[in-house]
Length: 211
Picture 1 (cartoon, rainbow, N blue to C red):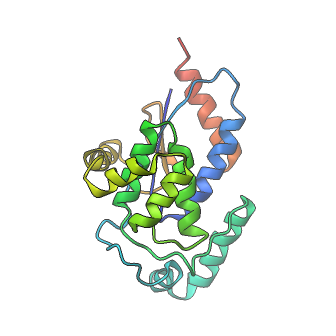
Picture 2: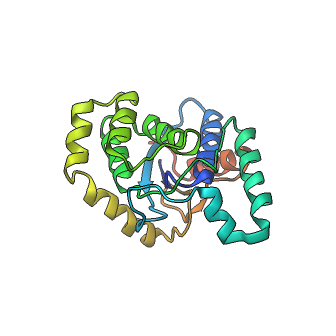
């Protein structure tokens, strides 16, 4: 069964959702065969590579007086999953190259590790995930060959795959992240409680029994 995860590095809910999904997957039976595919969904494709205002500042512009409470809730929910979400450090940038790096990592069986490192670098450390030097370092930490990472970043490898994910998201009706497409079914939210995610996976598993 294929589990597609539409996500973007810039989204704190994607980091929370990743933690909850990991916990839900851990509850699956040992014989459950689930293929996890990370799909690119750029939240800010028009952003540049140079960091601007912090995410918390942008949220203040979006939400006005409600911003402090909403930011506090995001941080609290993150903390409940063992995450330190520093919205005052995270500065939105273009994530196209970060998504290309995830595609490379997927081909090397390291996509989950790559996403984890990118999310931590951006949301906890406040790193510029559009900077080639940062991406090379994170690729190495994920177990990728740094020379290969450099070649990808210097060229346009995996660009078509990232753009294809945009089209696929539209075809599946994905309009927000994190969204899960489980076994080809309509997309569902990826930040549901662990028990609910486990139930969704179990239901989809029963509908797609292993041959």
